[in-house]
Amino acid sequence: TNCDIWRQSAISKIRKLHPTYLLVAGTDGFATVDESGNVLTGDVRKAAWITGMTDTLQNLKSSSKRLFYIADYPAAAGDPITCLKQNKTVGKCINPLAKAVSMDWLQTEHDVAINNGAIFIDGTEWICQTDPCSPVIGNYLAYRDAGHLSATFAVTLYAPLYSAIKKYLV
Image (cartoon, rainbow, N blue to C red; front, side, top):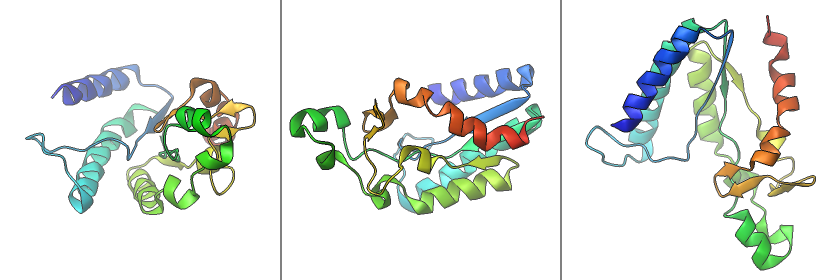
């Protein structure tokens, strides 16, 4: 129930602020539950996410001049810090692109974004620059755990994100 309260409050504040640009992101990484708290799986989970994200985008699209949807990013194979400490080599901590990214989920995100007036941004290649995907990109540890990018690496994504959205800036 707290998530619903937070979400409605956030949407209300965003609508009042009326930002020129609004970036929304989603993830496949959290459990989706029904009103009774039961964890949803499979097609039922996907349908619930589609309904929720559609509702969110519909509530937000009139509150800004440009609405962007940033796709979920590739996942790490596991906790990269633990893996690198245990193996002392990046090669044992890589994740094949097919496991790091669900192409079905990416297509779902794309379709929901486009169908609801958002500009779809896919940053897969910014994070998974090779196949298999490495948890280390350049001089940066890309992930702080299995499901979150490190803050230090995330800052490096400014340039490719700006490049992807600049043609839409007013």
